[in-house]
Image (cartoon, rainbow, N blue to C red):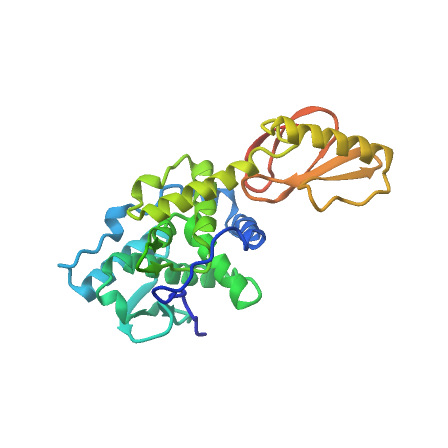
Length: 305
């Protein structure tokens, strides 16, 4: 099975920004928790250390690439997978041939011969493809599957390399991966909140740090939406208004502009909303302040329903 690999945006080409893939990113986080379990995801609570991906100009090209690949294999808990790394002229930044293993052949774009600092970023995406292949986790369609791969790479502790490979100045632009820089920042911030880990000191690219702060702000928004008690005054007021309307109009459908949905059943009014960590939907009775735990990622949530 062939893999087209991580994208290689031509130098000077415009870089897309913002959050156009956020729904797919959130679905990918949910799918990851469902496949690995909360304990399985927590096994990746410590990110790959920068020293394990460091690659100097004085290092031997092939030996250095193999060393970084081994570090990524160990971090992603693929002990019996062997990566054989080569270089050739190609359109994409990298590709991997997905087979039964245990050997996987990764090809990197020839330009990495002289851009060695980003070899770890390209390898992180391809080796995550191997992990997902072994887990049997995939999304339908190439683009959605690549977004799943980027999201998994970032959430499991190696994707900070992909964001750090983003550089944009007056003379050149470079970005690896299918997510926008801000979306990479969003996933990294979600990970940071879940595992109390701050990746920002590892960034060598100023543009990567800026994208991370923008993504972090969007991730913070997830923690401040009603019915969570951390929601701001405006959100709580809107929630109270919507709750009254749902009580008075039980036949009304959901409002697509808000993340919560009210449902009327035999036990009375209930509200469902996405977990701010894993985005699995949670259902609670509407009865005021309550402490709940997500059944998927086991995050403790303080709510005012």
